[in-house]
Amino acid sequence: MPAAAAQSTRVYSDFIAAVGKTQPEDMDYCAVSIVGPRNRVDKIVGKLPLMP
Image (cartoon, rainbow, N blue to C red; front, side, top):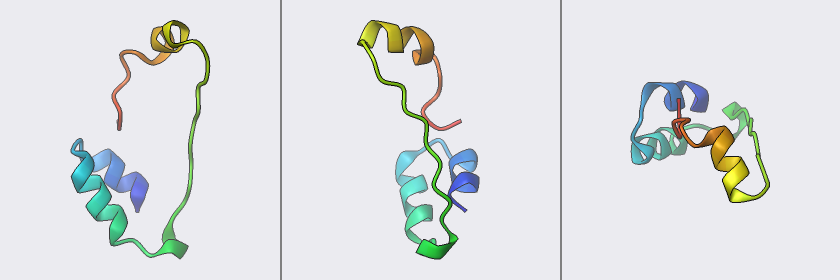
């Protein structure tokens, strides 16, 4: 459900509301973390949308 919510909205508060209605056992957790100096990280992800 959260993946579908993330792909169907660009408003974070709407996403949080949809996730709030999801049962914990129905959640699939996925994450990507990029760590490093800000200028290098921005060069990689600077133009990516927050929730595609």
